[in-house]
Image 1 (spheres, rainbow, N blue to C red):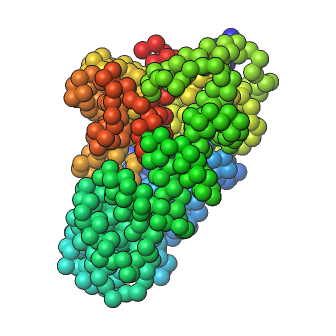
Image 2 (cartoon, rainbow, N blue to C red; image 1 turned 180 degrees about the vertical axis):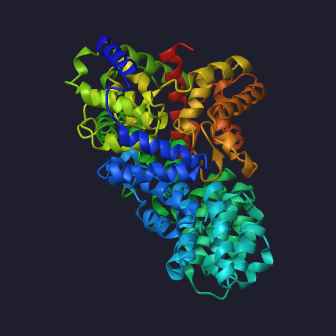
Image 3 (cartoon, one colour; image 1 turned 30 degrees about the horizontal axis):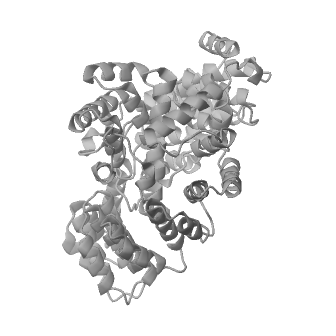
Length: 614
């Protein structure tokens, strides 16, 4: 622990002027001017950067070209705007530095593609300009991409016919326009409306696709899936069965069997549910159907059937392997349990389950069978924490403190992309070691890049979990001052706030989910103009804390029900059977994915309580 304090002391007390970062300073000046719409000053800074620091990592990575190109675009120099915006594509070699989902990438690409397309039109390169504008065609709603898609369609409408109907349907919700659109366009709008939770409109368009003379089975199958999903959201189960029976001649029977199975599962008619799931013999729906079947049999206590069903899954995930291991444990097949448990430990070394199965194998005499979820997990975590090491002095390799100082100085500039550029070329991320993992997390925390810090710590979970003091990096107290204030203001436990932030956004203050939940605590977006406010940590945590207060009152102070309702919805909270003491028996949850997610929620909540004595 002494060396950790020395490392932190060093990082917090370095001199930010010990290195010459003229290229970074000039770029930041230009970027700040750009964000203030002072484009003349921004142009001067960026041109100085390119003239004097042609080999700067900022330029070699292409990151700066986005701001350079956008500056020229706003100044009306469209030739240069096109040149630099076409170069504004940058990636990182290390996974924890990248935006993983297409959804996140499009938040960046939308403005770039619109501006590039518009600039190309202005220099009479119509074909390429229209190509970029037509790339802004999304099948989900998100404030920023949808804003630029709308603008792109307006530009295209000025030049060509055929875009008016698509615009009117998607953005004016004029359903009459659907008559003039192809099925592939209708499908995109169907999915778009569904993401906005406008299920009635999504169902209307989906049925229109199903009744069209087109013989494109792939589009029809996607349309019926959107109809099924919309009806499931609205709990209109009879309608699902009716639609499935009506279109059984034009849609793959496996899709119909699957959604009939899901429907009867929701109705808790498990005999029919099993019939339809077990009618699926092949195809992409088979693994999920088998997982449902396994979960149902597990809740019945028929562990041999669980084993039989799971073993039919050709490519198993962690949830299937857990069901298998738990079933062997219930049947007291010790050799099979140990074999499956070790497979989980080896295949998922940084997962909670891998760590817990390792602990169970080392403590075979611990009686867990007679306890419910919270008590059982608390017991495991207590014993787990007692078994961790307290002395971290032996975990450190020789750290390059000069490189560490350089990266910490850059992190204090508080520009995420600049720090990423330096990190990907550093020795810290190119060699996996516990000391390098801790150094990178601390550097990222120093710049308040909390989502990246948590992501990096998660990659070192197996190593950090060996030491009690390092486990805290996997359950950090980010935004502590805001959380402290909200906890006191609403008289709510801090561990509920932290658990919700970690599970919902993984501490990404700019998180936007596919169903338009915003920020650290995944606040639902009601009006587009709210988005900038909701992305502010103090506003987001305040609103999330207020909701937690309401739920605690609704559930008479039951923290577990509050957490489940907040993170998974009221329907899930109502469907779970709670004991008189407020605990739950996870074995009674028949949906394996739901059980897995709720177990992770309980684990996260208890670790926060135990580590910080809340």
